[in-house]
Length: 316
Image (spheres, rainbow, N blue to C red):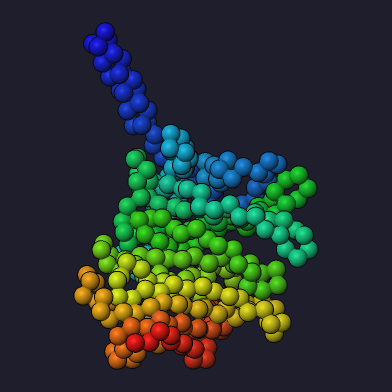
């Protein structure tokens, strides 16, 4: 009986292995990356099915529920896209080894006139037969498609397969919708990375439509720091709505944290402190701090204006 079971188990295992081997990237034509392509989706709108319409490759990950699409475009000419990690250079997309596309976010929102929209955000990484996403300093390539409600269907209004790469291990952070002007919507992404065992530093990015395409228009350093004993901080943002700007309103970044010199002996790596608190860190043993910075849109990018406002408490 045991011998029969082993034969059956071996047979089933060989079938599963064969099925895994057959899962190769689906061939697609270069027109799928045309940013002017049109797509109409009838209700009900199912995000993963729409993703497959946009990138009709081979579906992976059914067993673990990830359901990502793997595809390859042999006639496409790869173009460079910025990886904000800045270590391994630009990413050339679509990847010649094949692309694994995952659904990153499905965002619903309405404007002041009651028009309904959906944003599908995607994460692209290099195809891997095991579905792995590797490379600590390789970001996940962020792309998106915007749909507008039209009766009982959704019409694709804009399509940008790739914008830029954020995050680590080829995994882009989930975008958060933010209104930066009157019916002007953008996305924030918290990019966090760092070496093994070292500090994890966080930058805040703002991605918005500008000059006919979605692109990063704000980068805020010193937004977050974790995995350090002697110092830590985290940030939050607020869009200023004081009726002085209709679009590209100012953004205030507040960063709160603490410093404790006695704990520096427990840190495995040296950590740079924000310049606004550097003098205090040299003369005091411990304190809490809050740094407020204001960013305004100047030309094509948000830049910090005025001097940061710094507050200290529990100073010892």
